[in-house]
Length: 561
Image 1 (cartoon, one colour):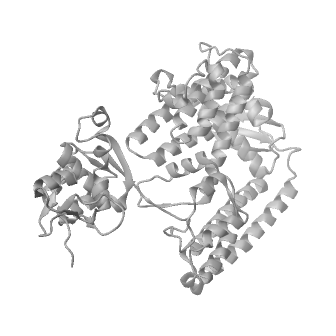
Image 2: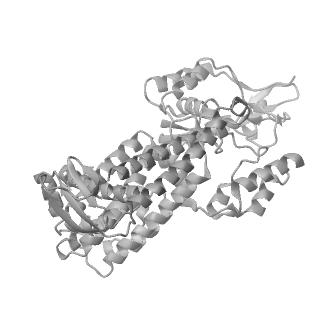
Image 3: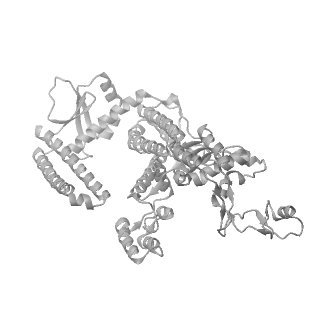
């Protein structure tokens, strides 16, 4: 038994509990309050001495009679003991969490009232894991209140624990740990196997991991880049306790970065050598994308305030990939070809791109900074860094419900035509004739306003209006509200061949369906196979069943023609 140093904690715990209860500090998500209260309300005296080599040595000295002198220095201890008394300092060091608890203010010059201390203490938010709420978070709150009279931070954002794609905790013995640098720069299979197995486990386990690694990574890990990895973790930052990490997610966000880069190339190519007219007349598509941008900014602001980084990244992803790249850039091609809409579209293209990269900069700083520099000459703002620019604010004057309703109609029309092409197996590049029927005055106005966009994006040669009394030709149909789109099939589809093709596809899928059902109806398979495998088989069955339903619907339509 050896003597240890203890801190009587209960007098420190009570103010720290009250700081959370009265709202001076809040946990995000709030359910972690319970973990904190449970620990603090049942806290015991804290043993702060450790018998290890490294750390802050306990500032206590002993004379030969065992008398203890606690002081800031040996000189001060010597003054307490008296001149000529031999002193020996305690060999123990302070517990790591004791030293860490002092960190928020001790690094800023405390106990002196320094400018740094008044500027940075307390800070806004602490980001940490749930597993050290009692070790670190609670200690910082207790010490902060004791020594400075103030809390160390206002919000405590608790993250989940990152696990592998199968939900297992990452560990060296399992060989499922991934080095972020390998994901950023890429690594060959040979080097990956070497890192996974070298000196970490028994040979039998190493061989097992080797086989798993080959199956999972095939040729190693490709280079995903820093931005893609950052975006992945932001997108995974939900309020859940666990985060399942999957390389396919990183690949998806690498594709997003490529999409953003290509979009910026397109915009800069269309604006090269042109002066931007910020007062140009805007088309309905321009007004629509600016309105959608304001909605996105509003949601991003809310999600940031709520610490829902996953929802924030989802909003930005959907707006950039869906609204801006998939729709607006396609709209812009025909708008740029028209002298009356060209200037407004150019101004809108660069304005929205500039705000997109500013919104995304905290998530993917490297690609957005590079795009910003390349846009600098056009924007006449090529000085400084994007990180110093103000975050975009919502401009309510640019919100246009009218534009959003009209473009939604436009999108439904284009998607209806694309659905017909897919169902009837018509080539996407085949130019079509089109009729519309059962339209109202609003539909007619939308058709007239957006004729060039509809023709370009739907690959239409003609769009003719057909009264309800006129008999429609043999056609495939889609609906936009109550208005009917009709695509005449004469010369486009061989009815007999298409029926034969659909029947063959349905027959193949039915065989797959029987195979999946027989597996899932086998009790031995269900009880012995890993849960992940069973789940995958169920997903395959559901996907096959849905495909059969879709093809059967197409076959039914074809038989009616």
